[in-house]
Image (cartoon, rainbow, N blue to C red; front, side, top):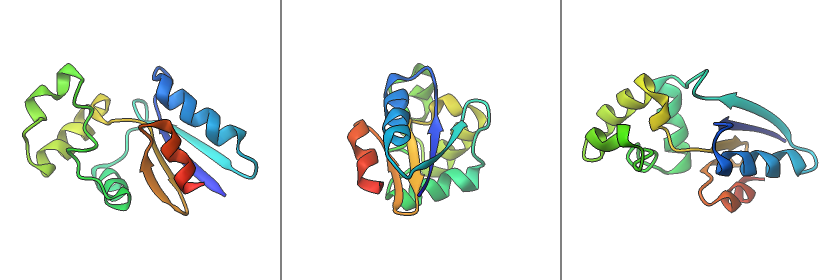
Length: 112
């Protein structure tokens, strides 16, 4: 099974989710450091749609940079995330079984 993790190596939750993926037999992990290689607007919108999330639910709301977007519409939030990917809550994990925002990290097991 292939798993793609949209990862921030400075985030302990993201590191723990990556460790679960790497320790699971039969999982081929693709790591995308989204701060270095951010998703396109279309890709990000698609990930949220597959996860059953709105862009607001995918916003890293506790980040000070997110304050102006907390009450914004979905299009504005997506545009802000593409312009400043630190606003993307992590980790997002995609497998052939679906997409999850892995907070808490145990949610990654739902798609393995």
